[in-house]
Image (cartoon, rainbow, N blue to C red):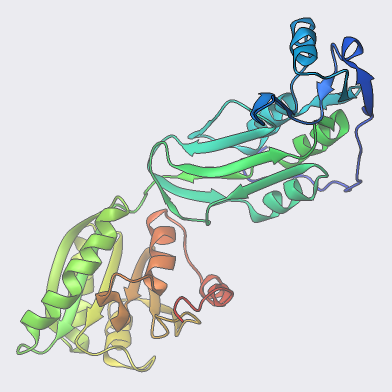
Length: 338
């Protein structure tokens, strides 16, 4: 089964068989504490979820406890930490490290730099299981080694074995995608009089975005805002090995038939989308010259504040072919200011 393949399953709520009851401390050995036990100063002496052992009985008596509320597991029940450890192994793909379970919680960390990828369907299915919660950082968020990317928590002191068997059918939920498109070209356009200013306000923030995400700028060019010049610059960039071309200029692209789109088409490109439901960044243009993405960046990229380019650039660097539908889907949460 592939990393993102999953099988449909019928969701049927399941419950553990364990019994919760108040027992004398002598009878608590082998059972699980349901609540924390505190000392005279109110400090935690024994933690909920602890398996009571013979040596704990004297401690409970010393704390003045004659009885204690416990859970007794039945066949088919899996203690929270064991259940969390098993679930964690199921949901995490390669290049992800896991913490030891504690209190039914496992945290996940990136083992290398890249971007978090998630299977949204599988993530939803995992969270539909009774007693299981899994939260991740945003899809395609950049990650670095040891960065926390997700946390899993089981609810209650145990899960039924049947829930874990259902989870096995779902498949992996998350993985780390490396940077695949390392080589980026920045092509700035404008008048000769505006060259210094355009380079000053656009080049540094564009270069910083690329480099902070683990890629490199291999071409940085400035050409006249003319159809032929733009086409030649794109051709030269791709000829030099650029895997992504980023265009920005003295004037934002104002129409799908504007000079920059015509230059892209002349270079053999196909316009995927002009106009994005994201603010800042409505005037985004996305095109492809063969497999090479071409971003016509809106003027807001001169700021380091989050804008539409920050939402799609990680996906392009990870090698995803971002479609018109993908950009339109950014409308849900697309208002980034206000």
